[in-house]
Amino acid sequence: MKILAAMSGGVDSSVATALLAREGHEVVGAYMKNWINEENIIGHCPWEEDIVDARAVADQLGIEFHVVNLMKEYRERVVKYLLEGYQEGITPNPDVMCNREMKFGVLWDWAKERGFDAIATGHYARKGSDPQVILRGADPNKDQTYFLAMMQPEQVSIARFPIGHLLKPELREEARRLGLKTAEKKDSQGICFIGEVKMEDFLRTFVEDRPGPIVNLEGKVLGEHRGLHLYTLGQRKGIGVASNLYKQAYVVVAKRHESNELVIAIERPDTPLLWARRCTLSAISTTGLPLDEARTLQAQPRYRCPAGVAEFRPLGGGRAELIYTEPQRALTPGQICALYDQDRLLGGAVFESIQHEE
Image (cartoon, rainbow, N blue to C red; front, side, top):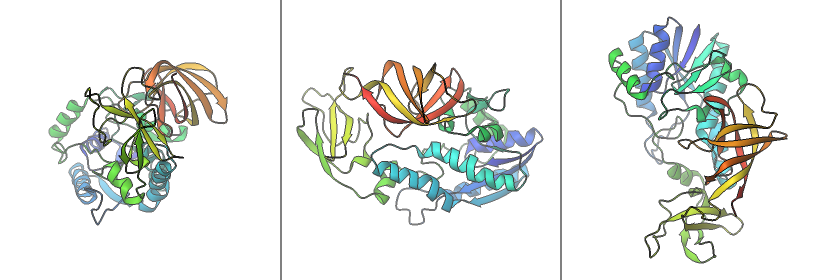
């Protein structure tokens, strides 16, 4: 097959590309140039060194390499979605949208025009014997299928995940065995293809601070926040209010946009507004067959959070009611909910509204 390998300059995509080349495919590497932070005003943006590393690996493998400029599309499809979401008071997920709109969207369009059969990434995910099936990665600590939850069926069919069968230590060892330049390179923790940038720094660069009161559940003012968009439901650190007299820490339980109040409470197993079993999903997307009948499945409310057993009840119009068996902590409007049947990724949706425990 003629496969375009999306190379980020990291070790995962480097090994993914190497494995495809070893299998005998016609492989071409491509770096998605999505963002340039020339003024370095929002943290370290290592796009230049990432390109150098990706190109070095391509040279080592003896394959063609391209830098594909998608900066305009990235601003329109990912950055705009990110900023508008926070301004509207919800919590978007740029990494999920980057996969659907950029890697398997715009980049695939670029590849398809040039005669490629598939596009490969360094995600820790696996493909089933059915090309429409995405399975969790073999490494439970690195599984990244959550970030693929909003992919469309046609995108799933052309996606390849060459490293999904490996554990991270095994991948590092393979990179060393192959002598890849990126073998010891640290994993990126930044926003998708932007770099080592903290979300708070990114938001404060583009969204004006709007300070307001921090209040407890009874309405007592405990401090002042810098802007509701800088806080996340369930957040414990960085709130700016010290623990109470009993050394119990506060947690964010609500953001009241009408009054510009950040609501915090002492975290307990029964903290009001923090726990929920029922919610409404919207913008349902499936990786294969439609989710048009009631069923039991597993729903993962955010990355690095266990998927909980839940009853899925379609409402029509791309919406559904989701009822978890056990209460879930800090379900958040705007966030992505990944839906599974055991290890199989069924699709995803957006949390629309939450019904909290009494």
